[in-house]
Length: 199
Image (tube, rainbow, N blue to C red; front, side):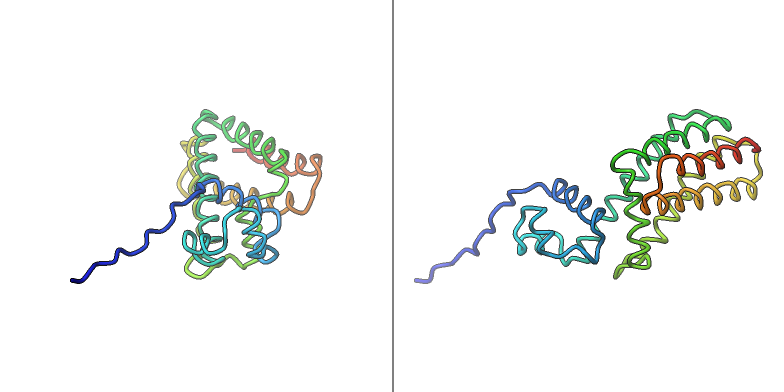
């Protein structure tokens, strides 16, 4: 009489994926992709290497998940902020004020993870051109702000203003990451405010 053998059931996960990704986002943001080893990832996450590979894949695949998650959160934050700043040119001023406050916060001083990774990895991971994705989504969200601020502008002018805001804010993230002080950051944003006053 033959007996059937059941395949062993894997042990249930004892960790929350979101919590792990949150911790690893902070790690990559602090150290960069290249300087972060698998040993660092294991130590920070508290998850054994085999479990990490089973759940997230290779280091590149894990970082891709981190970047997708970060980008979704970042764009959601900007969209929510834009929804709350009202309309007219004052909306852009209020958005820039909120951007400055966030930039000078403890976490904001590290700049933007997407910009940092773009500089380090030339904007690409296997299967994910994240820099192009980021710029496109950033431009799309800021286009909503420009439309609320200047609803009567023709399409070409609105596109130019959106490009200007996108370029300046992306550049500011590089400046923040390089350690610029609050006074310098405020000066650059004041220049943007002055430009918006001419719209």
